[in-house]
Length: 406
Image (cartoon, rainbow, N blue to C red; front, side, top):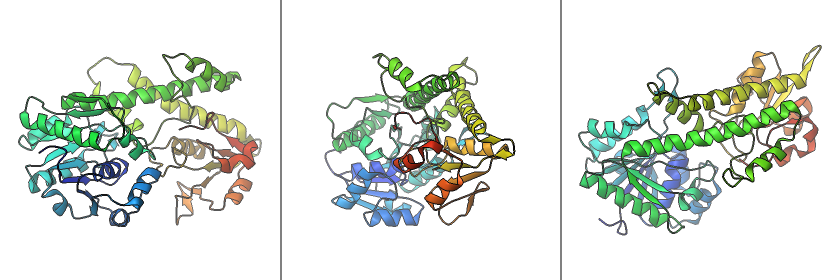
């Protein structure tokens, strides 16, 4: 079957990766998206986005997509030519590896219902996972395709991909054909021409994902350490970064200081890559992980110095728990660790986070819903990302967001 003809596609998972891919592919092919969350499915079925992504919201509202959302996995998988697996894989610190249980469960279900379907794993996995799953399922047609999407810009990044990578056992004709066909599906939906397409072994494709995120984490850690040095020495961080980044080999991107990297990918992917070096000499990946930890400790120390009084600490207001301005995710957010460090030191902490609905406290700290009350009760306001709402209390705000970029 040529990619230009209708392919029946199912997508498991309606997070940023799954929903953006479902929208992209449904422009030309019938797509059934599956999720365990009936509220999320209902929103998509009604043409509404459960995620904070303006492009996804606009595409769903505009209609014209051949997209169906359901909680009925069996109906979605049984007749699909391709099934995209985009379910979460969190890092388990005790096991020193990703928790692959969700991917395992979905893959086994798909193969049981429809053994002829090609499985495309988009979830981030350890190196070697796809090949092992293929063997475990008796030689099933399982490919890995890394995603390189930004939260809140996921559909945009699907429409304008930096590269398309498919990994599989390419000496197997069925694997090679499935990789070619799926790359064509992604190219069909892209709005850019001449997008690089790379076909490689699944182990190599898995490594591309982990090393890409490790490099981004390293860059975040570098500019955060530059900022820690400059702030300690009383230097202008912004001027130093601009001077450094005018070197074309370095470039002026991904250089905005923060309280540390966090979110869906960088914390877990760097730890997974670190764990993969058990028997291989390395210093850099471990240094990146440790640098992120020490950055959060540095920020907490800076805050403590600013609110320490002879009679005790002044109140610190935490403005938003999300990693990115406009985002809806605070999983693994760096500010959560800083909050915990402050609380352990006895600092009274207040939280303003509109996403915390129907709760009066979070991690033992009061949640303030009224912004003006939050401003008045906070002696210092901690903001990983500065927003216009803070302009009126700028003298209280402590942030390292110099360039107002994510």
